[in-house]
Amino acid sequence: MGNTINQQDVYILAGSYSESEQEGIQLLRFNIAEGTIKRVGGIAGVENPAFLAIDPERSRFYAVSEVEEGQIIAFTYDLNSGEIKEVNRQSTQGSSPCHLTVDATGSWLFSVNYSSGSVCLFPIAEDGSIGPIADFKQHTGSSISLDRQQEPHPHSIFSYPDSNYLFVPDLGTDEIYIYSHNALEGKLHLLAAAPATAGAGPRHVDFHPTKPYVYVIQELDSTIAFYTFDEQTKSLSLQQTLSTLPHDFSGESYCADIHISASGSYVYGSNRGDDSVAVFRIAEDGRIEWAGSSSTKGEIPRNFVIMPNGEYLLAANQDSHSIIVLSLGADGIPTPTGESYEMNKPVCLKVI
Image (cartoon, rainbow, N blue to C red; front, side, top):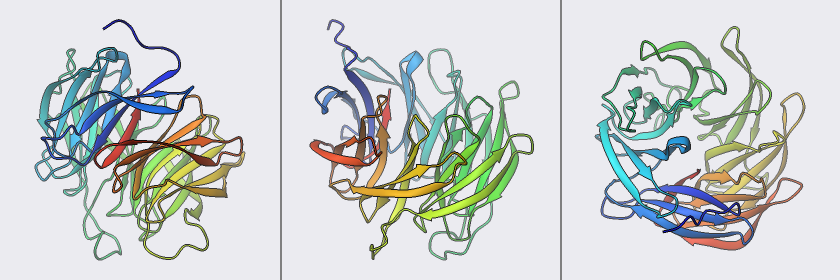
């Protein structure tokens, strides 16, 4: 095929909870002018490719296989042809890997095993293949929820901007671990562990684009916690916690994903149960204020993504098998446009 890429197109990789025979990973094209999603390509062969990490400079991405004997898988992709090819796989030496991150150099991959409570470091070779595990950290401990927090459950691993620090929220122990990565040694070093509110269940984090503000979405009590980060002491200080649910909501709901707008003006969080995206304004001092929420027009919105132009938000509704397009107004509030794309149990969206 010829070069069909134009500036109106944003490419997205979508992961899902799917059987290995199904096309669990899809390459999608979102047209900014039309606000529409179309399939470009896809690949089967992975059971539960529920989270992805992209290395766009080298046209590679990596996926977890969230199963009992966890794996991570390397792929290459071609935006023109839509072709996705598997490169290789490695064991995570644990169960239910649910999140992974590739470093800025494209030379290292970090992942977490949710069920067995561990953090993994892998080298990446020149050809994009994943090497055998280089370092492994086992978390220990528990917290107050008898059904969800009897053991450690690291839920994600995020690189702090312009540093070698990694933030790992652990839902099971109600702590946010901060590691440093030594690339010369190929090792992870634990720097600190900041406590979350007991029973909160920290899940994902995002960082303010210009200030040392850290926002943590907490699954079990449906809140967003705002911390300040002191890079000198490697310490997080809790400043504020707000509910992500409307005041009139009653029933069960659990938070999932969190993203900050490129301007640093808004923070968004997804609610599975209320089936909405909550919106908060961010003040100069980092404190947040409820701005509103919007339905995702589906069930169990898990991951979501804000388009690079800041005009759209796409949400993955796991249980209604849909990716929904919402437009973002000047007030930061998402509004469903009526556009959607059908996919089996989509749970991860990543802009290339």
